[in-house]
Length: 310
Image (tube, rainbow, N blue to C red; front, side):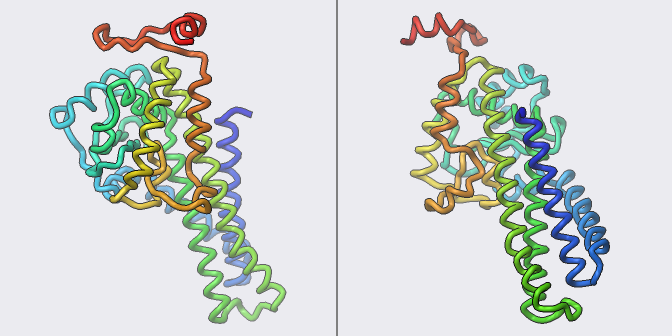
């Protein structure tokens, strides 16, 4: 099963969890599974419409990102201008995040409303070749409309969690139309497990899309090692200097997780393990000569690459 098909299945799962959780909530509170189902569907539609039209504004605001012109960020604009046509895109809006943590993200519901944001830290840390690899990853997200998909998944998972909390507190303080203890136990089990299941599916979607963006970005520019080298620097930089702006809720949008936690937090990571991503990129059978004076990358065969770089 390809990445796109896996994502579709996972997304169907999270919608299914949302609908079932809404039905259980309706059965418990109103005595009608169908009533809860309808409420869940209406709530889902409203949440997704808000996410669709305002996700870019919310993400930029929550991360204190500032939209900039090409004159204000000439290096960022130059590289994005070079890469965007390779992905069949017009240049998205550009933004700078005021933190020395090296990172980048993309947001927006489609190519016409996309924003590519870079932190001040990544512009200081990465050279042009590495920055090309990072920005190619972000443009791959824009091309595949991953930001919209991941925003929907996160929103639905949050709604499931909210519905579960309603059931939990309702059960603590009475209610449930006089339902028996056995039903109460089943409802509580659903209230606990539904948000966990939704979160796990959301994380699986995020990790799947991150892996695909790595591959699409690297193949489009013909230089997997550019992103691999950048990821090594970014991982070290984020460990040494975790993000001091923004919300952990937006961690899935960044190219590497900017918010640090212990081993338990790593079990619920929005990104594949960094070592796995780097190894996959290093094993890709593409290579390229980066020669800034030429103006465009030169693709070479893997055999020629091994002869030059044993």
